[in-house]
View (cartoon, rainbow, N blue to C red):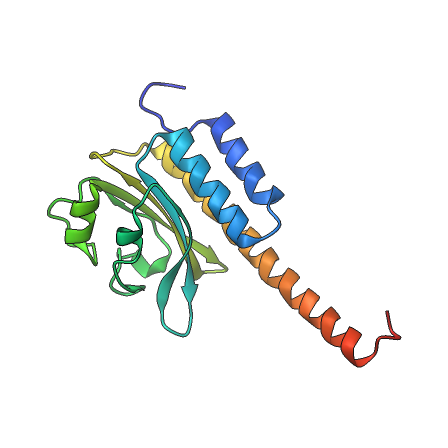
Length: 183
């Protein structure tokens, strides 16, 4: 791995295997954010899911960030880091002076100097976001960004699987209550 890269194929493979080995979204999110922080040597990472009712991002998992920062206030989809059409990554190389942050003073207090925000989407609809936070200005490489984009696709598929699995289990439970004889 050339110096300067924070993620390589082996690290990426480990993180993706974690996504597919998890049996619920909270465990998956927690393990992925922990691995991102430890393998990439960044300040923090978070995975958000969109609450369609409030149009806000809700924390699924985070690592390396204070509770004060995480609980800074609602993270509104249209006011938080601007995701162009909600489908493109946003890279804030240096948060000082950036107008893309909803809570710039909180980021500064937390010691966050750069953020990479990637949408998690399914079929063109945003369902969440992956954010990587660094304590210093960071020029993310195209290769690292590609790996993180692929990771968000895997996270999106996993979230869809968890949602479908919950619906199937709910349906099965309902059928068991109504007609226990069927199964």
